[in-house]
Structures are given as structure tokens and as C-alpha cells.
Amino acid sequence: MSTHVLTDAWTMTRRELAHWARMPWQLVFGLAFGVMMMVMFAFLMGGGRGVEGGYIGYLVPGMLTLTMAFGLESTMVAVTEDLNRGVIDRFRSMPMADSAVLVGRSVADMLESALSLTVMIGAGYAIGWRWHGSFGGLLAAVGLLLMLRFAMLWIGIHLAMVAGRPELLQAVQILVWPIAFLSTAFASPSSMPDWLALIVEWNPMSVTATVVRDLSGIAVPPGGWATDHAALLAVLWPLALLALFFPLAVHRFRDLSK
Image (cartoon, rainbow, N blue to C red; front, side):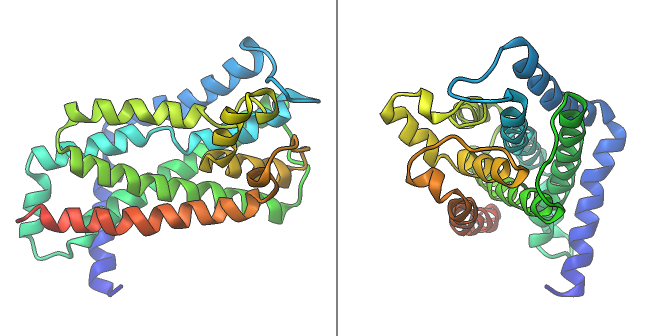
């Protein structure tokens, strides 16, 4: 990537970051939402089914993974709003790299995701969760979580450009929550019917949560092949999703001017 492209991408990133300063309540609410969800499931909803030992130790890694799905809707809405207001068309008419618009959006989203992850880890410590693994394991866990977020981000960008209008995103947004909750974030697959456990275990969010639990020193409940090979799948799933949706998003973006 040339210096010109990097400069343009940073300009677009600064544009997205400027929205934080103008509307800080949106950022604060996004950060608080994950914390409220974690506290609710830790203290109000009771322990997870099929989980032995301390539930908080099982829950927090699942919530860290679930956080990678939080806020994706706002990214999708921002993309469609720029499309409908003609903002992207104006950017494309300027002497700047086309890729800078999408790169800037993705960099800003990843910065927000890293901040959310930091807040969630701090909240986890506040409610009694502890990391029993190595520091290297912690870095690996954070890397896998952000890798999953990056893959999900490009799925969101592509779907936002396909939808074209914010009101059409409602149907897409409805799918985010079932996929997120159809995972091992809150309960072990061992407590589920066999057919459902199979689906849940292969969920990209489930395998990432399983690896984070393992790296944190928490015993992982027994499962099938996906659970036993979670580390491999936690890398392959994001790479496969990126290989599919990144070129689709870029191709869709280039077609916008046609």
C-alpha cells in the first residue's frame, strides 16, 4: 500500500473518529451495553447450564467474544447513511484512493472494538473474573478476538452496501443476535440436544470463546470435534470469512459508481 493510500486512509479514519467527539454518548452507550449484559447474566440470570465450577470464569470469555458482535449494526448503518447522503460519491470524485473510504471505516471500527474489549476485561475483573493463563496467552486471546471482529466487520460492510438503505438493514440486524446467542457464550453444548449442540459448537464465536477460556486457564467442558480443535477453527473461520466477504465488499464498492 503506497504512502498516498495510507494518508488517504488515515484521513478517513480521522473523519470517523471525529464522530466520537461530536456524539460521545453513542460511544459510551456502546461500551456500557456489553458491561450491562455481562452483569445481567452473571448476577441476574443465574449460572449457565452444563457449566461446572465458577460460572463467571466461564461467562466472561464468552462475553468477550460476544462483544465482537456488538456495535456491528452501527457500522452498517453508518455505511448506508453515507451511501444515501451521497457522501461516498463525493469522496469518489476527489483525488483520493477508493480503498481509503473502506479502510478508514474499518480502522475506526477496530479501534472502537479494541476499546470495548479493554473495558470488558476491566469489568470482568471488577466482578471477580481472573486471568490464570500466561501474558502471551492473553495477547493471543486478544488477537483472536480482534481477528474475529475484523472478519465480521467486512461481512457487515458488504451487507450494508447490498442493502443500500438503513431501513432495509433491520432484517439483516435481526440475524446478528440469533447467531451471537446460538453459541457457547452462556451455556455449554453438553446441556443441549445433540443436533443443537453440533450447530452451536461450529459457530465461529463458540470456537473463539472456547480458545479464550482455555488460554485463560478455565476448564473447557467436553464436546465434539469442533471443541477439540477449537484453536484451529478459531483461526480458519475468520480467514475463510475474510477470503469471502472482503473481495465481495471491495467489488460492491467499485460497482457503486457504475
